Image 1 (tube, one colour):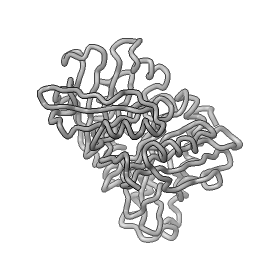
Image 2: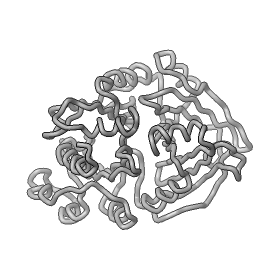
Image 3: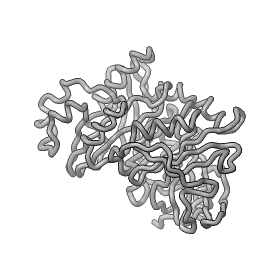
Length: 362
């Protein structure tokens, strides 16, 4: 079937935050991002301040409203600091917008052209789950630092931690809504289901969830979608939905070529990760086979391991990166494996449940 909505790559993720400058320092000093562009009062932006942060092929845009009634400020009031926009680079913004909206997507920003001395920047947006926007971007005729109204800036910077690309973006949706959003990505954007995990696969004594992983035709863009399942306690997904005030992005997996080095640097910088008990590493070699990485180092850093018929992967999850138990990050290194660490689901869920107990939310 013809790919009616081709996607080149992830262009950027835009965070709506209460203090964009503070967030820029946070992602620089702890995650190793470098500030490359800025818009604000000094550049003529009277309503929004934004910092563009880059590392490898990953680009974050951290934005704050400059008045309490600005939509960004209202979003932060509702959701806390959160990822509000998934921007995808496409070859043709007009076509992407028309194809998706004609198939049922709700248009939010019609195809728009912004122009300055560096060329023409084209974009449009449709609505995803919750208040998240999916933005189509075409920068083929734009040579500026990021977009019009942004200026190059060499601001807060730190040591690169080795993060390379966005591996996948996970969304949490309300109970009973997973299949709705699966159909949305299938019908409006031409995605397909890569894998399905039911509540028997992803469960512990206290919590459970169901998940389907959507991917585009190239396999480069992956969107796992979770919904809570009935369980003895409050699932991590339900906790997220309550504190986020609805559906949204639960976590982003950032890929590295050397997870030991990346996690070592991030821990030294102050990033807090979920705790993995030492018992997890007992007989690990027998469970997953030969590893290039020393198990002793993996245990010291509390990095999880999973495998499939194509190889293995290494992963670790941060604590939430704000006071609400909502958005967090996964650091992942793939050594052939193309899965999502399903062998680690139980260990991961139990780690999250330990944190829920501390929060009084299990």
